[in-house]
Image 1: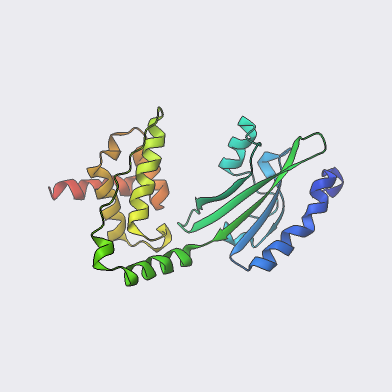
Image 2: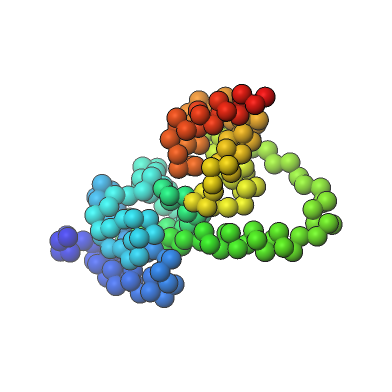
Amino acid sequence: MDNEKLHPLLLNMIPLVEGISRTLGSNCEVVLHDIKTPQHSVIAISNGHVTGRSVGSPMTERGLKAIRNKEYEKNLIKYKTITKDGRTLKSSTLFIKDQSDEVVGCLCINVDISEFVVAKNVITELTETIDDSNKNKEIQETYSNNINDILYSVVERVLENIGKPVAYLNKEEKVKIVENLDEKGTFLIKGSVEYVAEVLCVSRYTIYNYLDKIRARK
């Protein structure tokens, strides 16, 4: 990489990448992006094993969306992302602006919290009492003009009820998720099979296979 072509602000931030990741540990990936070259925006990265990226990797989908829509007013803090192999990350994206308030890059922090999610659910199960389990639960509903928002919301709630990161799910649990989604009418939404397959880290043919077996039992 030719550092002479980098904005001085980004050049000065390169040492921070390793410093932050070493402070927070091997489960913390820190990435510095130059938004001028989204196709190979990563100019510095530490603990790249978390997402499997390296210097020269492209901008993420969320990052591209932010660039396209100029969503720079607020930093994105503590949002959840899922890796290709199903691990859960807690992520933050901090936009880097120059003196003219123009965004020149962003610093992204991704912490793999998969093991903590499992531990949290084990502790919750161990400490649950009869009174806790009998409490009335509010019904969550999603109101939106975009059908995809409803799809994303339903899938997210079903996964939260399972209480495990996707990487820790076995086949039976994935079948149960698909069955639950089918009962909610999720697969009536166009593109839902492809989306669920991506979330569960399986092929769309596997989802169709699960659905055939589920519906054959009824």
